[in-house]
Image 1 (cartoon, rainbow, N blue to C red):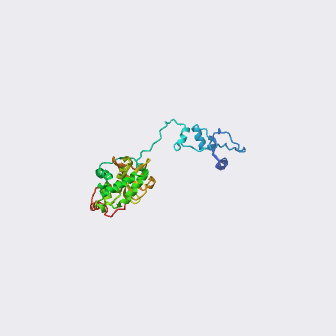
Image 2 (image 1 turned 135 degrees about the horizontal axis):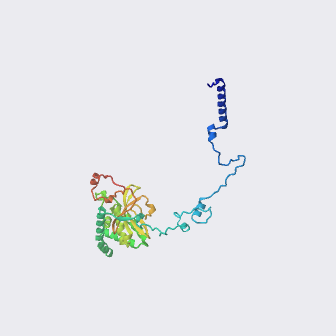
Image 3 (image 1 turned 90 degrees about the vertical axis):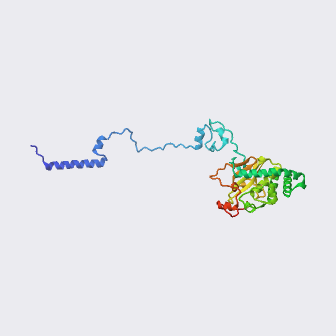
Length: 328
């Protein structure tokens, strides 16, 4: 039977455990890690040798673009973008076809395209006024040749027409007609004059009464300029929304030397496009009929001239106001 001397075994085991613990603390690894750790294939780095920073290369966007596009230009030159600088397109390598220059989409007033408006109240009003002007044309010609056969309104019309024909040029003619009609007619809205929401009158009727609203001014100027020799393709009645006063308005647009100028009953001078920032054009009316402006509006407002000739009381019942509008 084997006899174990316990007093001698315990001190030896305790010493062995202490030795292993001290070795682990000093070496930073466990005995198992030390047995499984493999020698590294990386060469040892001598920390005593000086470190050399790698060479830094600097470049600019210009140099990269020039190299990419095959342009041997200085890196300090400005970047040329073919999309914004047409002159630089020839220097940019591209296989895209050369496209013709884009022309202006339209030469209509306000630079907006127009399309035929659907049949409605405006067509009815314009056809009625055109028929009245055609009926008055014969009496105006007769009055112009024999003053003794003129009615007061015909005599007034022919006098304005002769003055316009004697103008030095087309612009002077338009300015004369604009001032003359503005002075000959006193503004009165259709509620006061006719008792209806909107009614268009012929030029002779407007000159006979001496009063009218903005459409009547524009129609009279249209007829006078046509009689004085203006091309009908260069004349348009334009119905707008004046955002400055939040009211509907009507003016006459005249094309002079390729530019559209506006004759307004509120101004004695012709208006350029830059003067009309508050105008929202809605309809253009000429010898071809009624056209809608293809304007980029979220929702086109309703112009008062699109309303039928309803009495003022009926307009109020339909949701309108019986208060008088601003002078337009």
